[in-house]
Image (cartoon, rainbow, N blue to C red; front, side):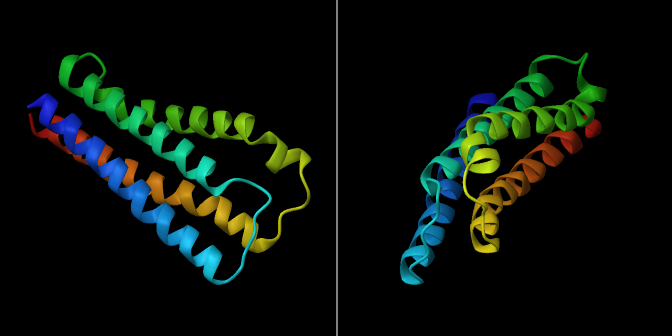
Length: 133
């Protein structure tokens, strides 16, 4: 059962990554929008980080009972760590690069919100499943 869930999470993240990146990339090409950062890198980071978070939370929920009540709080902490790593990896764009236009800022934040939405849906399902057991 656990392996089936992990495969579903893998397929979900890969599908979300491919669909959202390709739509976003297509729109930037169609409207001739050029960003001072790699859109691919932003999406790839978000996909990998979201996948790691979801898998870790599934493993914590499935294999240990001691963290069952703290999973929601652990998720909040992990979000802070995810944002911190994002800021470190993309510090040249965020802090030291040219000022980002609104269009560049929205394009930078869009993948973050897409994958946070995915994480929240999956983790809420995990938390609800754990409270029902």
